[in-house]
Amino acid sequence: AGGFPGPVHVNLPFREPLVPGDGRGPSGWPEPLDGRPGGAPWTRPVPGWYGGPGSPPQGGFGGPGGYGGAGSPPVREGVWGGRPPEAIELPWAERGAVVCGDGDYDAPALVRLAEQAGWPVLAEPSSGARHGPNALAAYPYLLAAPGFAAAHRPDVLVSAGRPGLSRAQLAFVGSAARHVVIAQGPGRWADPKRSATDVAAAVRLTGVPAARSPEWLDGWRSADAAARRAVDAVLDESDWLTEPRLARDLAAGVPDGALLWAGNSMPVRDLDSQCRPRAGITVMASRGTSGIDGSASAAIGAALAHGGPAFALIGDLALLHDAAGLALGPDEPRPDLCLIVVNNDGGGIFSGLEQAAFPQAFERLFGTPHRANFSHLAAAFGLPYQRLDQPDDLAKALAGTGLRVAEAPSDRAAAAALRARLQAAATEALAGLAR
Image (cartoon, rainbow, N blue to C red):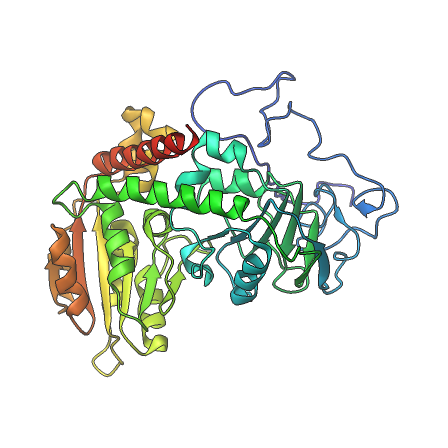
């Protein structure tokens, strides 16, 4: 009694990037994520809003300090405090957008909402919403272009699932004056930027004009088409099957009715940047809960549950980390699954981050090369193996059947340089539209 109560876990979101340097704010404390001086509160409680004077008791997901707890951002009263979220009426605004992240929610309803409102749909591959006339094919490039992003801040944004495949996407989610988050159940919603003004079970749009101007949506569509053309032109220059081209051609080439499983890190992000909107396929992703743990096993399980042709795009470290998942017993069912492994000899996602500027420690701590031979790995489990070097090689892998391994060799530094070039080409194309 009276002693220290035990271990305390504190989550402190700091400003990125986390690299060597002073990084201290004016007060001497490290700067928080939103760039305010150290020690400044995240938000100022607003009377009548959750967390402000007159608000209901603190609670919600995670308790105090979690979403809906003490220290959370202000969110409209009436949807928190452990009560089931309710449907709300949302007044129409011309400058709106729908962001669909990974998760279990009614994606078709949000696609219909966007079509009713005349808003663009920025949908991650595994959202189930990357289809329809309002879905964009190259939105990550638009959001990463500073001029476009600044000129297209929405007044209203509706998000569902868990967005977060890029910093630009998160910045966009947090830029709207009103941000409605669709909950997946009581106490279950994703608000990574802590920018939600409403949490609701669903929204009903009101006040939509009978003849609205298409200027807002057409601007997004024109920019999306220009960025897509510029990126495709760069991808098609090479005779080699680069990582972004592999993602683009795979998403376009899998047959209708197929399952496409996206691994963590770069595979799902390349799909997000390269996948054209299409219906008729199911895209699932291994996101967040356990990183790369069980990637091969999860893809095999998903393929078995799917019951038809399945394809998985995963990284080399993910497959090596779960190589034992390929050891199916002789009496176990075997999926019709092609495991397409991007082998850049390590953690390719880190080559595009600021840590890559510190080469002395980068390779050992972030790059983590392994020098593994995937043809030997496939042979160890008696699986067919194919190497993918050129774009035409992919068609052969897609035409196969049964559990098999296809390896796409790559170079981390070259892939990072290509992705930077793709963004530069898209940004230049967008600047040309503005002139």
